[in-house]
Amino acid sequence: MRRGSRSAGPRLQRVDGGIHLHGDWTLAALRPRLMVLRHQLGTHRQNAVWDLSQVSRLDAFGALLLWRTWGGSYPETLIMPPALANSFERISHAPIVEEPRPARLERLLTRIGKGALNIVDNLRGMVELIGHIVDEVCRLPWHPREIPLRETSAAFYKDVVCALPIAALLGFLIGIVLSYLSALQLQNFGAETFLINILGLGVIRELGPVLVSILVAGRSGSAITAQIGVMRVTEEIDALAAMGVSRYQRLILPKVLGLTLGMPLLVAWTSAAAMIGGSFSAWMQLNIDLVSFFERLPAVVPIANIGIGLVKGAVFGLAIALLACHFGMRIKPNTESLSSHTTTSVVASITVVILLDAIFAVLTRTIGVAR
Image (cartoon, rainbow, N blue to C red; front, side):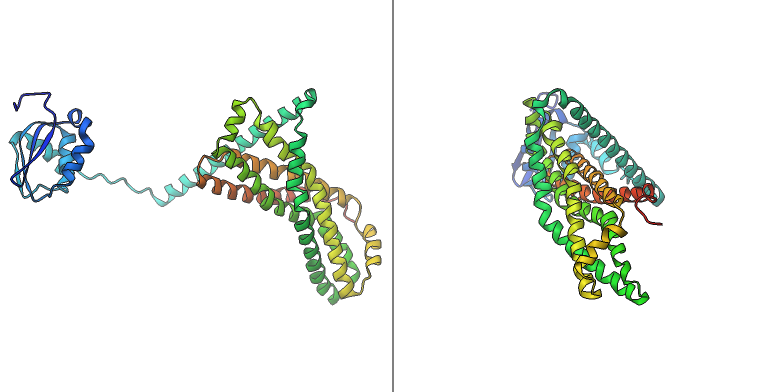
């Protein structure tokens, strides 16, 4: 083989226990047989005799390939022309550049910035989602055949009707606990008669809507997010788009309508169960009979509190459905994204419900409260 040949491909031979390299060991020449040569180089020992005298050309890539094969140091026996030594010298004396670790303040500011950008991105996505839903709602009256009645009724059944037993049990137990603890304190001041006031205002106005919303966020909100996320992973949503079916009309709008319309009913059901539980506890502990309890309840709890509780339920249901659909649509096609976004959906829904309840408390502080 002539040293001046430019078309000589790289070759590796084992002769008398030594490794002889031939041809051009450059990036262009190594690329077609790179995997094979890497395997062959990996099977030879570093302490063998390495002969590079027949190597016609050697660039930085070829030198780095051999240098890594040798473990970052020259082998014990190496036959190499002086012309090739410069390539190895540049690699062996190359400085190790370590990326400086950012300071603690810089890391903190970076984390805060990423969190703020994430919040802004989620807000933008929520506004976009609300815009699509409003567009569908405004368009459907002109196309009544496209109103998703079956999908809405299915969502209402799964998210509201199926939640009635657990909601009733939760409300009944909460009513018993709240009545029992309140009675223990009221007995110390001889104010047992105010137990009905505390139960009525606390359950109907505040505790009932919040408890139901937390229950629905953990039960139905997570299910909605997971369902939409699985549909994204399995590309069913893309299939709907390919068939010309609007995902907002057939997938998201029914879930939003189902929860928004069903939450007031679920709140009323849970509040009624809580009042029944509280009345039983009051009867057993304070000897307040059930008839007197429910006869006095409308007198001490203004009817406006029922309206406030039902409106809260509708608003909370709308917020939970929007957040669940939003995070479901942001799931990427992998299981890690599915689990993390489902968790984020539940946490965000509960947080937003508490914030909305605080806003309602401020806006309705003079409504339905006896002075």
